[in-house]
Image (cartoon, rainbow, N blue to C red; front, top):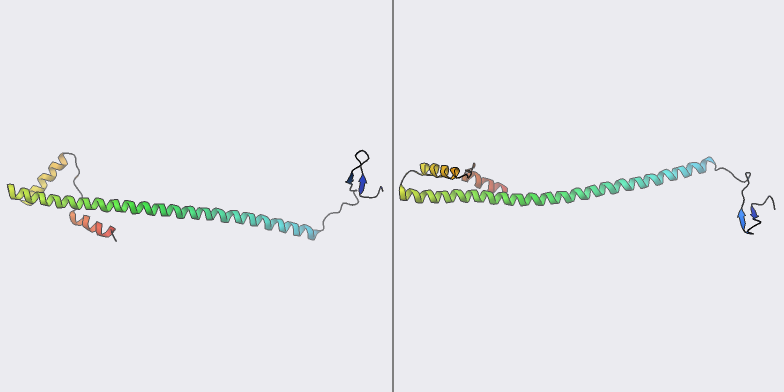
Length: 144
C-alpha cells in the first residue's frame, strides 16, 4: 500500500491523494503550444470584443450628439429667419411712417429717413446694418 497513490490518513480515516515525485510528469511541448495558443486566442477575442464595444459606444454617442446638434441648428435657423423677418418688417414700418410724415410735413424721403434713424440711434438703439433687400434675400436662402 506504500506505493499506492491513495493513502488513508490515520487520524481522520479519510482518504486523500498523495502524489509522489515519480508520478509528476510535465506536459509535452505540443500540449503547451496548444494551451498557449488557446490562451492567446481567448485574450484576443476578449480584447477585440472590448474594442468593438468601445467604438460602438462612441459611434452611438457621436450619432446622438450629431442629432442633437442638428436639432439645435434647426432651432437657431428658425430664430434667425424670424429675426430677418423682423428687420424686414422694421423697414416696411419705416417706409409707411416716412410716407405719412412726408405727406403731413413735406420734405424728402431720404432726409426724413436719415433724421428719424439718427433719433433712434440717439435713444440707444442700433441701426440695422443690412437693408430690406438683403434681409429678404437671406430669408429666402435660409428657407431652402
